[in-house]
Amino acid sequence: MPFASSARRTLSKCRISHKTTYLHANKWRVDRSCGFMLAGCIWRRVPVRDVGRKGREKMKFWTKLVVAACVGGTLAGPALAQSVTIQLASAFNADTDMMQAAERFGELVSERSGGEIAVRYFPGGQMGGERDNLEALKIGEIEMAVFGTYPIVSLAPAYSFFDAPFVFRDRDHVYATWQSELGDEVREIFEAEHGVRALGMMGRGYRHLTSNDPINSVEDMEGMRIRMGQSKPFIEAFTETGAVVVPIALPELFTSLRLGTVSASDGPFDQIYTFNLHEAQSHLALTGHLYATSLWMMNEDFYAGLSDAHREIIDTAASEALAYGDELALASEERLRGVLVEAGMQITEPDYAGFMEKVRPAIDRLFAEDWSVTTAEEIAAIQ
Image (tube, rainbow, N blue to C red; front, side, top):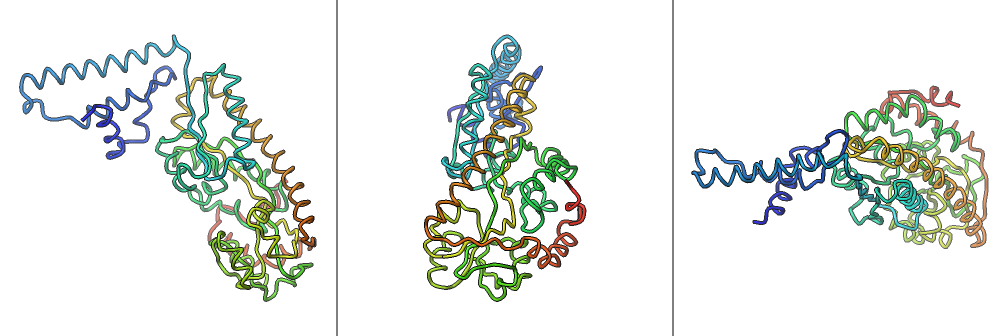
C-alpha cells in the first residue's frame, strides 16, 4: 500500500484527534504531510521483537525520516514565508450575498498577505449540507465555513433564540444582542467545547409573510393555514397567533400553495422570489418577525496555529467583508421588494407590536423550557 494512502486511511479510520493534522512550533504551521507520516507510522506500529533484524532496521529508517521531516519543517518555518490555504465550504450558492461577501474576504486576505493566504471555495453544498460542513470544520477537514444560524442551534441550543421569531425588535437589536454577554457566551461554547471560532455575523434579511388574503393585523392570522419548516419556535409562535401551522419541506412549498394545502408562508424576500411564490400568492405582509443572519466560522486549531500577522489579516478582512455583506443584503432587500411589487404582490404593513403581544405566551414558554440562560425581558432591555 502506498505510504500516503495508508496515512489517509489512518486519519479517516482512527480519527485520533482533530489536532492530528496540525503541528505547531513557534506558531509556525508545519505541512500536513508530516502529520500524515506520523499517523501512518503509528498505525503500522508492531512489537519490536516480532519484526526481526531487517524489520528493526526499516523501522529505524522510517523513524529517522519522519523526525527529519518534522524537525526540518519546524526549523524552516521562521525562515520561509508561511503559505496558508483556507478551504471554505458552504451549503449556500455562490451567487448569494453571503458567498459574494466571502469572495471579498478571499480577495482581501490574499492582497494583504502578499499572496501568502489563499482561499479555495466550495459553495452550493459541494461538501454537503450545513451539518456536514460543521462536522468537517470541527475535526479540521476544512478550515472555514459560511452558515446560517445552524451552529447556534446545533452547538449552543440554549441560545437558539437567535433563530426564533418575535424575539428581537429589529436588525440592530439582533446585532446588539450578538455583541452582548449572551453572544460572548455562545462564542465561548464554540471555542472551548467544539473547537470552532466565530469570525463574525452578517445579515441575510427580514422574514415576512406571503398569503392569498391580505394580512393587516395579527387577527387576520386566525384559521389561516401557513407553511413552516421543522422549527419548534416558529411552529409554537405562529400557532399562538391562531394560525394552523403545517410543516412542509421548502422544495414542496410552491406545489402546496397551488394545491391549496396551505394558503400562506414565511420567508425572506430572496426565498419568496427564488421559489416563485409571487406566482402562487398575491399578498406580502411586511412583518419582519426575524432578521435572519449568517455566521462565519473557522477551525480553532487552524486559527491558533497561524502567525500573529496572519491572524490580524484574517480578523480585519473578515470584519470588512462581513460589513460588505451587510450592504449587499440591504441592497438586495430593497431590490427584491421592488421586483415582487412589479410582479403584482400587494404589500401590507401590520403592526409588529401586535404580533409580539399575541405570541408572548409561546415565547415565554420557550425561554422557560429551552432558553433558560436568559429571559425575554433581559433581551428586550439590550440596546
